[in-house]
Length: 465
Image 1 (cartoon, one colour):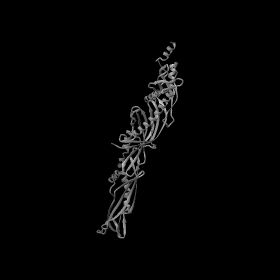
Image 2 (cartoon, helix red, strand yellow):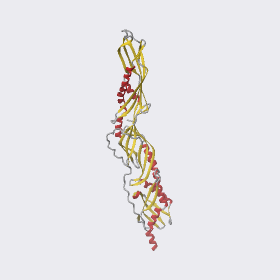
Image 3 (tube, one colour):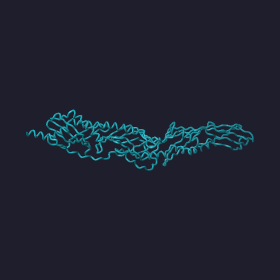
Image 4 (cartoon, one colour):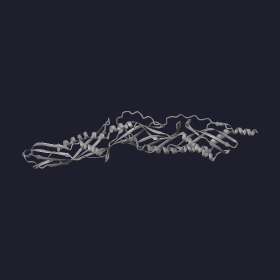
């Protein structure tokens, strides 16, 4: 009878529990990073050509003068004619625009001896202007024009045995043509909109971009700090003014952060266009990990939990509890219901473990899994034996370790899509992630974080609706 009473006491339903580890508080994990994004402002070359056609006069030089010595010995005549330009051709290479136009001149001497006139004579030349571009501190584009010309036939007329040319007069007028082009170009270069586009891009870049919509919600906030201007690039169809915007990037887990305040655009700076850099948290939410671990423990229980000395134990697990605790460890609370022979025990066993991974790997290892505290009596020893059993430890290690690999691949694919064709006001952002690196896992109050650094190239294209 006494033995039977003892078994009944041992099989009691009182709940046992080891001490719960302290919870680690939530803390900031993402320091602001500096990224640079290229911004190309484009102008089609046909538009520049059409504007120059309208701005540069067709007639470069006109002459209508009386000369005292047209024909020896000192006969007067009147010289009339003009030099006109043909169509302007706009091309470019490297960082300079090239403008070229043909010139043709027709000159005639008349009223020699009051009545005689010569046949009209022609002249031919090619004018080439190379144009560089500088941006002042107020973002005003200033052209630098270098003009050159080559005469195939100087303009002139033959009177008697002599040929009279007017090359020096036309050359003087051509020298003034460079000033005309320089005066006409700023209005056309304004079509590149360096000031307006930069100011608009500067204001709209003070924003946040959704990187991951859920589980967890992740935002990247941009706070521009400086803008640099590169050399104009000229291709076959367009001229491109490259800018580089340097911005502070912050990553937020949770709801969208408020947009940063917008200050006035700064003057152009000197920056190295070293590409896009973003620090992203790959987050394993504690609640998600708890669900995954619960399923794994249920499967382990169905296969049977083998405990040294006791053999196979009939055990079941409730929903585990996971959180970060002190010392950078993870706390694991296991609700257990176990039976071994006549002994049945129910309770909550707390364990802690180190989470470790090598840098640039997403496979985690669970090390030094330890039970917190002790439990007395047969019931307590049964719960502790089950919590320490290899199938339980293996389930904890496997599920906590594998989850990050899946989350990493899923989140990086989402971010890659989020940064492609992303509209920011009148601009489209395209970022190509070319390299990813990650550090080590940090168990924190908000969840288990694996920080990933993504590098690549990002470009903003002016694309108004």
